[in-house]
Image 1: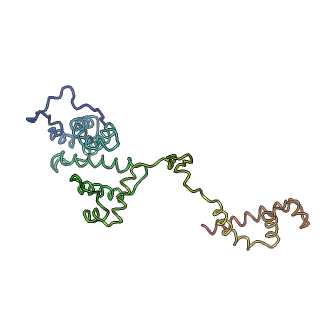
Image 2 (image 1 turned 90 degrees about the horizontal axis):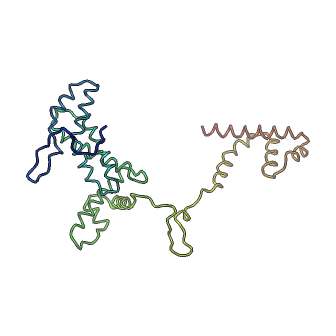
Image 3 (image 1 turned 120 degrees about the vertical axis):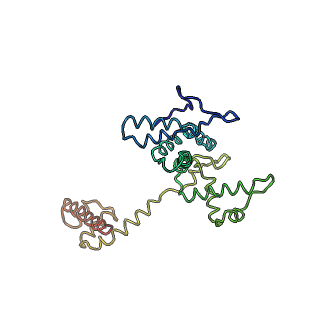
Length: 275
């Protein structure tokens, strides 16, 4: 893909200018090149014609990218995204359906907008919320375009856009959520200042214990009485295997095997139930 940022090339004649002196770089006459492109098969010659078309229309892609330059993304990156959209437009264009510019402009613009939608949010926001954000942003600008106009209320924006107040509220929240707040951000300016991370809770491992106990209950009921007694002495009374063996009159090795077999049986039964 051509990514040359220049808008003129050696050997290319200067294009006609308007009365104001601005060159018509956005709309070169490339109808013959597109016709030739459709006639060529895949190969070096077709690639050369394709590259030439991209180079001819690259100034238009740069102009479209410039419309989005004040939205937090570098102009260089925006030009690269617009160039990608231009390549897609060249590859998909059918010369029999009209002028290339009519097809390329919305294609390139859509590529740049998609870049902002998918890449510029710190967190992935659903497309529906992003659309609400855009509608609310436009409505606020339209409702406050006259100097001295107060900030519109949620009900005013809802009436202006046809959205519900809940949808407007979601859009307003999204307006302030383009970037995330660091967990180290200070929430208090006093000596006992604390950060956002200090206000967040931590997972309670006791819940996992409750879940595991409830899951194991049924399997424990199915064990023989002696094996249940061994597990109780080992894990609830915290007795050693030697003491359990002395109490039951069996060897410590036998106690160890019974514990391992009982735990494996309970575990297998729990896994079968989950499956």
